[in-house]
Image (cartoon, rainbow, N blue to C red; front, side, top):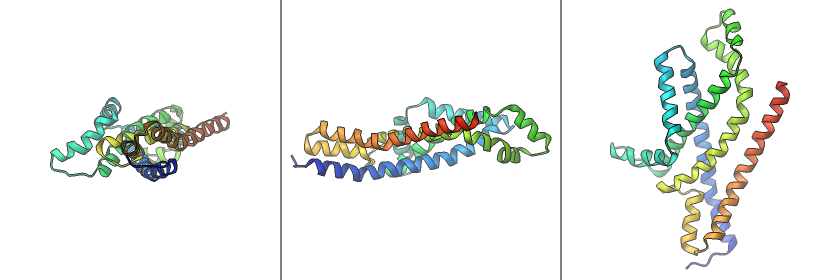
Length: 217
């Protein structure tokens, strides 16, 4: 058994936490870009395009993230596409995040009164101009709190990337536990680090929700 001090354990976990943060940001930003494209597609008048996006969202919301990670890592290899654990984790989490963000933002767009669409249409604005100048600015104010809150789910979701060998916080905790045989200490620290990462984000989401509700009223 390797002798690790409490500081040694914490410092190694903090190093691994960097990759948890990086992966979370990649998934959140990438998911936001893909999600926005899907949202626009869902709002178009093309029925086949709307139903394609609905099907996409249902698939990713209706299957466990763990399975999606396995498919991204092992499934692509079966068709001759070799991926690293990093690439597979980033891809799976990006697609996962995009499905949920699309649904969140679609609900926010739907909450904008229908009269706003009709008013903008009466001004001879086309679909793109309606979205950019009228609908999305109003929906954006509503969407900020749930969007920021969803980042917490993304951060916690990165823990599952350990099953495909991605070296993030949970994976590092497992390896240190195997070396030190001190699982309670190690995973207590892992839980504490996740809390430190997630709690401020949750508080920001609540603060934005209260602030925007007051402004709205």
